[in-house]
Amino acid sequence: MTDKFIPQVWSAKLLIELQKALVYGQTGVINRDYEGEIKEAGDTVKIHSFGPVTVFNYGKNTDMPAAETLSDAEISMLIDQSKGFNFQIDDIDTAQQSPKIMTDAMREAAYCLADAADKFIAAKHTEAGQTTGTDAAPVVLTASNIYDTLVDLGIKLSEKNVPKSGRWVVLPPWAYGLLLKDERFAGAGSFGATQTLGNAQVGQAAGFCVLESNNVPSLGGTKYKILAGHSVAWSFADQISNVEAYRPEKRFADAVKGLHVYGCKVVRPDALVCLTANKA
Image (cartoon, rainbow, N blue to C red):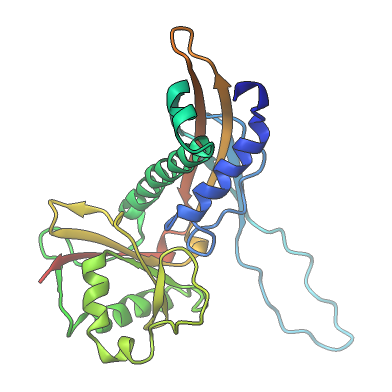
């Protein structure tokens, strides 16, 4: 296998499979515009932001004000996460099983890398600029209040001028189950069978694209940190920096190792709201 192994091809395929498995890290939930040329852990992505532009009254045959110098702020996103994999497939297994065994193993590696990255992004709930409920007084979600709770989250975002188009909320399965019991969602919010879905999208409710994930952070199994927001709130950048095939010295086997590097930065905290919720 190793003499036919093309690292660039495997590396690209691994990244594609990884992106398919992401929920928090997918385009539309998080901004991926600043990935650039990431090569290894320790790289830094520079993100520039500008202050508001002044609008003035214009009069015919009247000079306009001098050109305004915009305030410029630079935010650094450090690629500080490194996750690797290293597995082998014995020659006997290769001979006795499907020739696609390596493809299946690489797909599993991609999923595991994606799962780790998704949990890392979800943990950024601590940086949300807005909150509803606290650890001491969480919101107890029920079938009768979950839809209205989402409405309240949307109001918080609107009060901070967060765009209405492109808003999302990620729910754990039990909370999605509660939402299904509300006629306002079940009757109009669920996707029809013919509509194409993205990763984990299960419907629309209260102005949000609703996604379902088992990676919603949980404290003790009963208290959950449910994030809602817009992709302008944060940025994510990743790269499969290395994929290598080799023959272990003391084994008759083919082995593959790889490295995934990434980072995440909350740049507009007010565009994220964290709901601390308990099961009923």
